[in-house]
Length: 391
Image 1 (cartoon, rainbow, N blue to C red):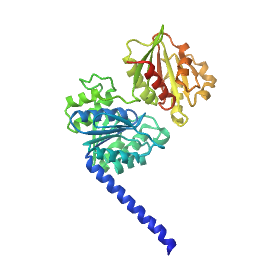
Image 2: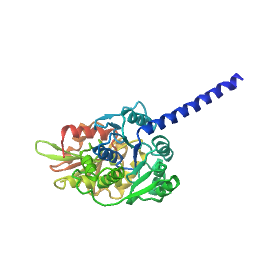
Image 3: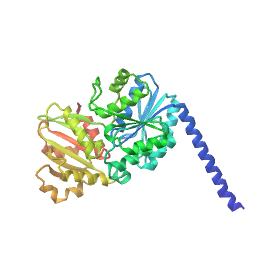
Image 4: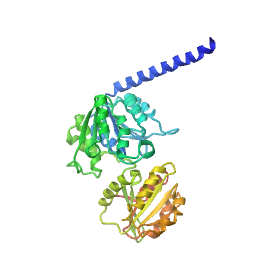
């Protein structure tokens, strides 16, 4: 009997723990009635920041959390605090964020979702956060091993985040049937965000699709357009957003463009077009630094395919950096390419990397950071920010 009693007692304790967890989540959600979640392939951190800023400008007490290049808590007064993680990221972090917002007395919580896989997306959205509004930034080919190798498969995975009795905003270009089926099953409504350019009256440089989505969400929540635009204009940019610095030397100056967080070729092409459009003149030479990560093999494969298919045709030189640089630099076929010239730098020191590409730079050149923010990418961004003049 004693042998049977122990597991039975443990089961009772486990069930009681789950009941207390559910009750706690319900209590915290009740204290933060307006909850917005943002998911998608690219732009989640930016849309989270823009939406939170728009709501804040309307007078609401808004808490927000981004996950992207650097996980950050954004307080109702706009202050930020980086989240320090003891281990790997987990969606259980969202429980703590919900409790944090409740204890702050926030009227609204805007959260960038963390998950990639369908099952964890569903748990994060429909079990923990239960948003009133879900914003989907876009559907692009990334995290292929976890989400699928076609846009339809990735959209199906993302549709797991569609909440019960909520409103889903998504751009017209990504209006996949998966989202509508999930919304119908769960009693939610789909709103399509249309348009081409940035909203009129927005002076700050930002991707137009991010602005349109954040504006649509804020208007749904009753924020006047003028207030929303005022708040969005003042929003602090994400660490991983598109940024440009000018580095000056005695006889030369060149631009350094951070596109590391765009990750995959489709998003990078859009980001590159945006970034080059901000420069006063076309670069005299275009040098790419492609940072590759050992834990993102599917992404490395995408970049090599893009190289073979002419993605870098406008570049004068492409330099592999990061985890795969040594191996890829030994592949002889890269040396036979007429454009771009391909080479590799194995150093992880940003000063050494910049010294290594210095012979390729002439006055008016542009250095473009690509591929991944992690590791070498983050170090280069901090180096450029420290030495350069922000554009």
